[in-house]
Amino acid sequence: MKLLVIGCGQCGGRIADEFARLGKVARSQRGVDILTNILAVNTDVADLSGLVNIKSDYRHRILIGANKTGGHGVGKLNEVGAEIASEDGDKVIESIRATEKLAETDAFLLAASAAGGTGSGAISVLTHLIKERYDKPVYNMVVLPFQYEELTEGRSIYNVGTCLKSIYLVADAIFLVDNQRFVRKNASLQNNLSKINYMAVRPFYNLLCAGEETVPRYIGSKVLDAGDIIQTLSGWTVIGYGKEEISRKAGFGKSSDFRDKDAQTEQGTKAMTEALGELSLKCNPNNARRALYLATGPHEAMSMDLIKELSGALKGMATEAIIRSGDYPRGKGMIDITVILSELVNSKKVVDYFARTIEYIAASKKRQGGIDWDHRGIEESFKDIPSLF
Ligand SMILES: Nc1nc2c(ncn2[C@@H]2O[C@H](COP(=O)(O)OP(=O)(O)OP(=O)(O)O)[C@@H](O)[C@H]2O)c(=O)[nH]1
Ligand SMILES: [Mg+2]
Image 1: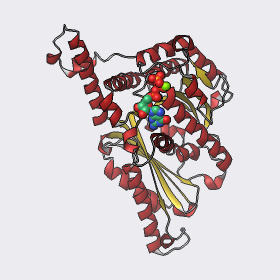
Image 2 (image 1 turned 45 degrees about the vertical axis):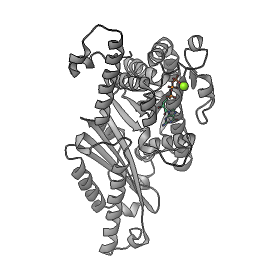
Image 3 (image 1 turned 30 degrees about the vertical axis):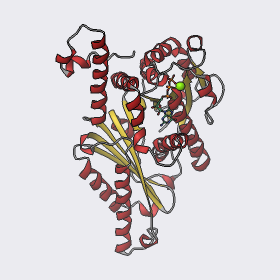
């Protein structure tokens, strides 16, 4: 599957940069192209300059709203980010049009943080703009803030609420990535951020490569291609990745001893358990209506027994989901699993953001006097969360 990735704001730009790095790895290590283009859009010159892997010309690093912000960002006001994106959105469309391999793009992926200003405001506007012009799925990847940010800045909750509402109205699917899930103690924030970006993007590597292979020995017995992924992705979505080394005990599939086969399937299910434990946002798999997994490992390890076992394990967790799956015979000494849970019907985290945004709006309106906010239902109040486009 080939993506055209667009990063919005600082966080989104860095995530797009990580995709660009992964794209280079795919090309050099596997000889496949998984991206048709990578763009970064920002109101901030310094953020754009800090990127490493995205081409540095103005068509790939797109500065918007320079006349309004002087190139210094929008200072967390996501409605300003949205306004600038709609004024300058044609710059992004121009860059998309200039993409040499645009026709090969299977889907767009736009990334941003929900709590900031530029990315949080721009992502829904740009998604809408792209959807109006191209008949391809447009996915979003949205990063949720750290707990300390929520506690210290009321405004960030409001940004998250308005961003989530707006993207839900336009994007075909939204990958949720929770910063707080990835916090590792004893590391500086900057290191954490790069690590989080790596961990958020890493699960896409095999997923995107699998369907692009042309060498017969790397083509699975059940290929997971763009069609399967597009069929799976809908609404709120999470992604996870797990890996397990194939121990000597399990051999490398060459042994016909039944105990070795057994050990291999056991390692496969361990990797599946890890992937489900490391989802980009904590959620109950029973809330997913669609799911997908890809098993990657040495040719000999990709047995029907393994696939049967893995499907059973996922079905046992995501009981309400239609499950798609594939195998990808590539790599050595390791079985790794990528899992996607999609069309989540109930995410506590998302519902909480909406509720807190409504509280935030109610509190600020109450301060201004007027409406009896204490006696309004959630349905009625939901309408009061402004949409950004
Ligand atoms: N995972 C991850 N989160 C980030 C990164 N950079 C910023 N964030 C998070 O993103 C939020 C802040 O949003 P930014 O992306 O910096 O904001 P922006 O879109 O550039 O908007 P303005 O700077 O306000 O114009 C906070 O919740 C940060 O924790 C990053 O590289 N990775
Ligand atoms: Mg910024």
